[in-house]
Length: 290
Image (cartoon, rainbow, N blue to C red):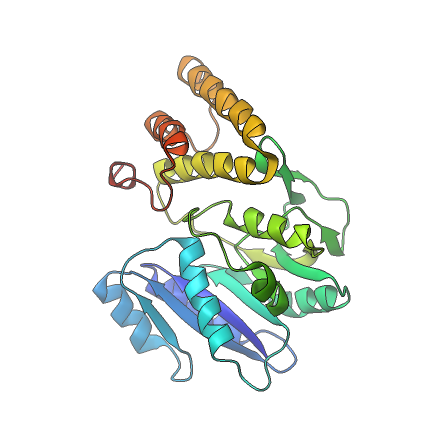
């Protein structure tokens, strides 16, 4: 049986639909789901609690602790409550993941064929593969295979599998990241002790909901990229990345055509300030309220 952690925040109907999709997956031995509620509003939590099947545990966190810390709560529940028929893997997805019916079966078949596979993720079908650049952190590169296992720099969190041994050996997500880049950090720690990460081509998942505001995304992606680069490439690389980000901020202000899909100048400026101050975790309230 495959345990899957589903992380929920204020999207109860989507969450219940996602739970149903995972329980219906074509996996030998079946799927058991654990839902982590990440500090949802009382009415949203009540809807989830009332709609879950009776055998699906609900772990309730008192506030929104972010993707990584919320996922860790689910991982700890699974690892601390093993079932006799559990396999070697633990799945993780947000409340709005929509896997194809054979998605998990394809992922497990490809990952289990590789003794050193430690982390794996599903396929968005976009022909892109996550890699880690020593200066720019997690970025996308063109796919190199059409089907099955493709080496990747890190998994994406829309649907990933982690081998239990990896979580026990290298630890869980670094909670400083809150959200964004924690998957890359975990993959780099796993790689350092000999584990592989891959994307499973043909194991399709859809993630239709952005789920948060642009300012929060822009802030966390930049701040956390700087942290990731410093932790795994060193302070020199992080300093160069900080200078490049400052230049990109100025260029975006002067030339709107150079702005990326997630653009908020005040959020970017705050990220450039908070990173050297060592301010990690949740984004500032002024950013969340934008």
